[in-house]
Every structure is written in C-alpha cells, then in structure tokens.
Length: 113
Image (cartoon, rainbow, N blue to C red; front, side, top):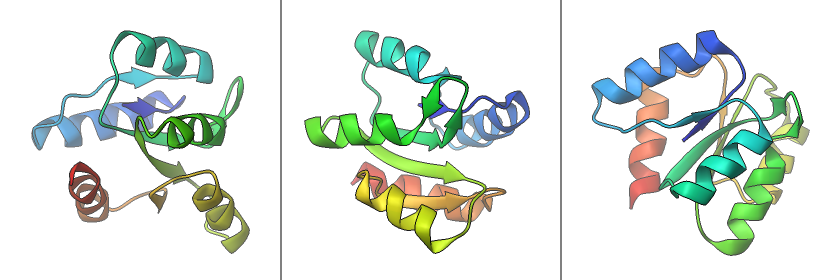
C-alpha cells in the first residue's frame, strides 16, 4: 500500500512497483488508508508523513503494535530527528524523497522476508 497525497508521487511509484511485480493499493489520507486496510491487509505500506488529515506515523504506530503491516516511512525530511521519530513509531526503514528506485526496491524486498 502506498499512503501518499501527491498524485505525482503516487503515479511514479505505482508505475515502478507494478513494473517489478507489486500489486499497489493507494490511499491519500489516514482515513482512506484505514478503510483500505479494513478490507484487505497489505504486506507493507509506504507512508508519507504529511497527509491532509494527520501524520502518517499514526498508521505506523497502530500497525506495528498489531504486528499487522510492515511500515516504511516516505518523507522529504532528511534530518535525524525525523528519522528517529519514524523508527520510534515502528517503521522498518526511512526513505527520503526523492527516493532512488534501487533503494526503494531493496527495502521492499527486505520487508517481504
């Protein structure tokens, strides 16, 4: 699942992921992500931190407590405080936008294991 409110980022990442055999579900808010997960649990989620209805790390915290979904943060903030906050919320990795395709695919492959 890709939780991101920028249509440009969604379109680019969806194309990349589908080309590499991933089935991609998208959500553009906390609410739409929660609704989507209620219908079908993804193996992992790429979470933008800044969403229209809150912080994507809310989802990481919820999902890591339930051990239901592997969360990877997707952010434009490269500072150490943001990285620490993402990891504390339960994210497996912190990917900085614009993320390199090879780095994203490597982290997703690791999340599958």
